Amino acid sequence: MKTTRWVVLAVLAATVVVPTACSHVRDLGFDGGPDADTDADTDADTDADTDTDTGTDSDAGICTDAVWEGTFFIASAEDVLTLAPYKSVTGNLWVDSTSLTTLELPCLESVGEVLHIGFNDAMTSVDMGALTEVLILTIESNAALTSVDIGALTEVGEGLYIEENATLTSLGVGALTEVVMNLWIYNNTALTSVEMGALTEVGWNLWILSNDALPSLDGLSALASVASVGGSLRIESNDGLPSLDGLSALTSLGGDLRIDHNDNLTSLEGLSALTSMGEDLWVVNNVALPYCEICDFLAQLESPPPYDTVNGNLLDSCWSGSELTCP
Image 1: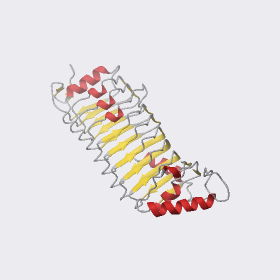
Image 2: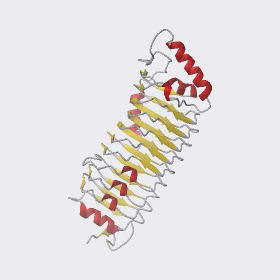
Image 3: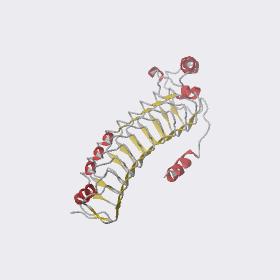
Image 4: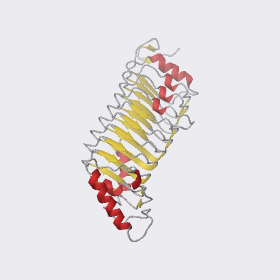
C-alpha cells in the first residue's frame, strides 16, 4: 500500500541539504539594524535554557516572517528552537527517529513539500496550531503519540497519511476542507476521535483501515460535494465501527467501494445518499452486517456497479445458497 507514496517522498527528498543556521534565511522579520544577530542569538540562548526539557517553545512572541529556504531536519531540541520563529519552510521538514517527547512549532504556517513525523518513540504530542498548508503530511509509527493538533490546516496539496501510531487517540484537523489526492488513516489501534468536520473533498482515495477503537466516522460528516471522493473508498478492519453515519452526505464515488472485515458494522444506512459509483463493489466478511442491508444499498444506486463481490456477511433472507438474492 505504501510503495507509490514512498516513491513520491523519495523524489521530493532527493535534493535535501543539511540545514545551516543562516544560509537559508529569506526574511527574519526583525526591525533590522546591527543588533539583529545578537538579539536572535540571545533569544535562542534564553529559549534553550527554558525549553530544553520539552524540546518546544510555546511563546507566540517569538514568531517572525522568517522563511527557511530548502529542507530542514529536526533531530534534537536545539533544532526545534532554531526553527521555532519561522513562518515557512519551502522544502521538506523531517522529524524522524528523534528522542523528543513533544513537538511544538507555534509559528509554522506552511511547508512547501513533505512534512514527515515518524519513528519518534518517545513523542507523545504534536502541536502545530498555526499550520495551514502542506503538500504531503505523513505522521507514522510514533509509538507513544496520543494526540495530534493541526487544527488550522485547510488544504493538503497531495496526501495526508496517518499510519501505525499505536497509542494515538485523537486527530484534530477541524479546518481541513480539501485533500487533493489521498487521505489514509491506517492502523491506529487506539484512535477514538477524528475531527475533520469541514472536509468536503478528497480528490483520489479515502481509506480508513484497521483502526480498531474508532467508534464512528462523524468527524467526516461534511463530505457533501458531488465529486467528494474521486477515487476509491475503503472501510476495512475497523472492529469498533457500528455504522457509516459520518458519510451520510456522500453522493458520488469515482472509484470502487470496499467494505471489508468490520466486525461490529450492522448497517450501510450511512451511505444512503450515495447514488453513483464509478467502479466495483466489495462487501465481504462483515459478520454483523445483514445481506439485506447490501440489497438496500444496491437499490439506491442509479446503475449497478460493473462488478460486485459479496460474501461472509450475516445470513438473512437475502442470502440464498451461495449468492445474494435481493427482493
